Length: 282
Image (cartoon, rainbow, N blue to C red; front, side, top):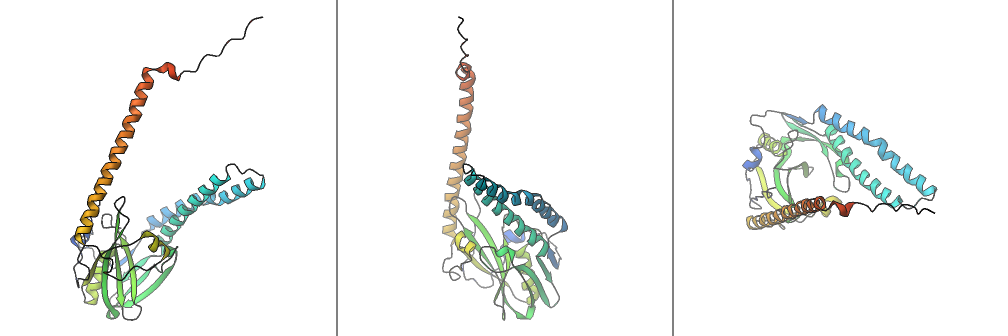
């Protein structure tokens, strides 16, 4: 396991180019004008959803039958299982809808978007279509958003379009270490900016809370909670220490298990049950 590489541009720098780490991860000479998920992706998520659906539907019936028959001993555990199953089904449904509905088409005079819209508990379940002429685009912006701390920092790069009428139109988020080939948002943002005759504006890096994003709460003003290079370097250093500590604990646990097995093999009598006493003869 290696520490998560984080780098940041200076917040507020105008017309900053897209980092080479992103452009290098996208295929060169990609002349696509339409971005969407393939049929195979939609088929796989459809199969997984339909496969899990009968088990998910049966859980409320099982809980109701146990409550009606008065068996309350394992009902709380079954309810926790149902909640976890519901979260998994929600994620699979979100991916299924995205693979079916998400689409970006770069036309000659306008870009057509069908992407998840809005904020809140289920932002991936609502979709909105836009047709934005290139002449209405004021800016194309990208920004890194860092979530979590030293234990498990996660860095996503978001891309959005700023228009004269509709304001901000979010394209999406990508993980620079694992770019989705179906929707390389950094590449899409660069193509949109080129067709609009402007440069991609890199807004730097900011630290956001997962709870705020999940609940749909707006973050602070751009740059107000920006992160500089020194802060990111310190986060990388602390994350490396946490990873090494976790690896050391794992090695110790595995070593302790091996030693316990060796001691058990040397003293097999301790693991044998005492023989049953024979009945007394009269």
